[in-house]
Image 1 (cartoon, rainbow, N blue to C red):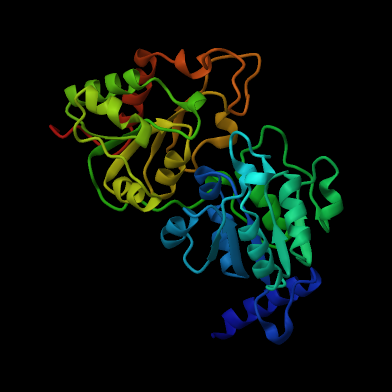
Image 2 (cartoon, rainbow, N blue to C red):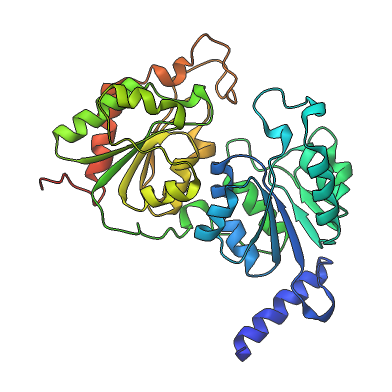
Length: 356
């Protein structure tokens, strides 16, 4: 270790001691990060995870696809896979169906770790209770519904219009880490200088899905202009795409397969969903069609990301529970309107039609 590096390490260690996080023998403090929700949520946490890994011994409790993300985005972080039953979209509190033996085993495993600190960037009382039950020494989060009783460090939530990433910046500040502002996040260039436009038509919830026939129209228009287009979709959409003649449609079964497709793309077009956030952190500029959520909260973290916001609705944002027979916030974005914006988006990227 150089003198400069040793000095930086001692300064950081002193900072940890001030926060009650230093361990005997100058070992790195042990940090548990809880992010049990979607793919996009995990990707947005990437700047925090990378910064934490350089200063803590990090364990991430997350859905199993975090293992694929770890290999690509956060090497050096230990991932403990867990599908929390309360993260299901429906019937989440049928406790008799919960995997209780697995949960008891996991509790024993994590409690034995004796974590110095634990964090959740969600204002979710369930996360805060979990940190408390695991015996984490320093528990940091944003209290809600009096969940501050489970936390040692209750933080004020970022301003209401703030991007989801700002919650991770606040958590970082509480741990003595200064994370970059959203517009200063360093995103690597795309892995390959391809010319493919990757269109992903899927999303975790139906209310976030722009009509497939519109995506089909966008793909046809782009091909007419000479662009190479790769259609990617969720498993339940595959038959629809095959019926309209899209024989080359890809249906990745894992996040690793999705990353491989993204690495061959020069631009990404899709719904407000995890694949768009993943593409952004793989260096691919993204164009997102938003519906019930706000771009201000969930726009992908890429400096050249662009989007169309959902149409006006008195309930916007509605967190995926639409009060109408159909989510007109996204379905009333016309194909013509979207193509006009997409064409401009592609014009400012390095990608050009194959004929050029």
